[in-house]
Length: 181
Length: 232
Image (tube, rainbow over all chains, first blue to last red):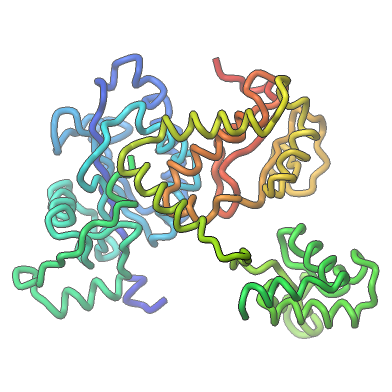
């Protein structure tokens, strides 16, 4: 890896629409998994940061994308570290049972983008990236696991085009990512 | 090298024994160890191990097996592991992988998880071919091995090769995911399908049970004695 790649971290946002309120008994298995899975994230290789509501253990009380939409905003050292945590840890069990607890999303529900190491993304910034992905498909500004870009590609993209002049990609979102969770 | 040529390299019985031994260890294997395990001379083993590497079935590297390093540690020894690439030959040509990926993509988009899990559970039960659930971990290991999962018994502490204190303290972990390529593309869907298949295959009300415990580089399911950590 080059030094410029080391200077970048991968940010991730995913949104999930609750089928029932969090205090509904049908959500209890999910709520019980929150603490252990978050604890696993905190100690996972390559984990940098996750959004937590002040005075609580997680971000489930924040509803910046809608009353019944919970958000998960994290930062990782590499895409591999995020993938391994998402799909090769106790988190996979939450994903496996997603249909019991969350509505199926027609649009992209997860977005990845590179941030300078040390930068902690805001919720507003994260929702902008998700909107970018939904509107324009994957690009070095906002992408998915199945359509990923390296930090170097993202940096070159930023140098090549100023954001307002960016040629909008017409590529559709690969289906593999669009419906997960 | 084409798949058919790589696979043809295994026709030699010595070469095949060496390949199967290295593949079964799940770690780097040196020439001496491979020769001893398969009962052939070291030079012959070295020759065939290198042929397997040329064929793309093994990967080789060098490692100081003594654990020493620095001056006086001696020359690094050549070590071998199974190559990650998949090899398959179908005559006549068939392409079930593309079919599997397309079906998985459609199921993912439509949110068909529950229907897929139900079908996988039924298939597992049909494959079991018996009303009685799997009788124990040893039987489970045989069933899983026959389906290509490469199971191994591991102590509760997760130490490879440790002598387990008692059967209840062990879990069966699986080195190989038979659905690897599709599972990598659609993890929750395909790993959930795999769990349901194994639940059907082993039974959910008998002495063993399958549950999700994903780790990097392995099958996402473990099998253990049902008496401990029983839910509900």
